[in-house]
Image (cartoon, rainbow, N blue to C red; front, side):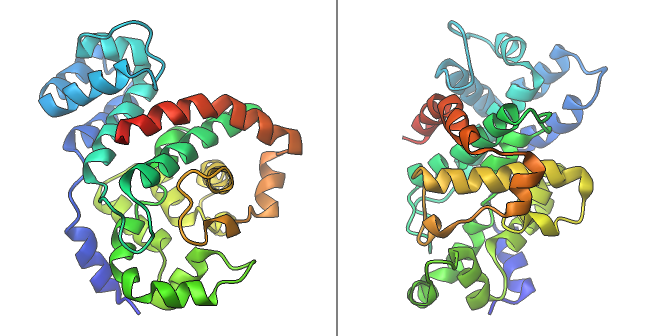
Length: 281
């Protein structure tokens, strides 16, 4: 069993998320913030600026033509996509390779994360729901708790796998063995990184969406929960036991998902997922 102070100690030793990303959050919600304000924050971080240009020019974030400056990237992407690109670049810098305890190397774990974010956005579009703020980023970060939990899992991995059956997901065995799951630790990480509340809610409740205590975050939690199952089903970074994922029926009802919806979601998201996967190659 993991004591809470042990998990918190591991969280405190994680590499911090980029301070530049944290500074962008209030600007994204400030109607008076200008392009110049965003550019000023980014240009103080040469590494982030370089990553922003590289990822924008890679095309995964819908760039059209060559982008040569931070100002051009900000104007082209818009605030929402700008934050997604910046967060993606920041997350790639802190992910371990391989991910201990889960049988995943960096490209596969990254592939799963970007698939969940992309499927969440596409699902919202296909069911006609307003796209919540930070939906892609919430999907990107939903499994961040694995960076800590995995360090405790390695010795007990065989025991978890032995106890799994066709209806028991890996995360249930994880919690049974360790006393907490990557979702609980993910919440700790989200708070330590000062992430927006909606992202923290997803990190905590993506496996148990109907237990989410915050109605204002229910939609984004539901979207990521369903997108997570889709990502595993289509082979994006499935960890040990990943294919045992099931979507809560209540989620399908709240979202209004029909069987034909899934095909449309996959068609919409697949090219973007493949483009984003290449960033970790």
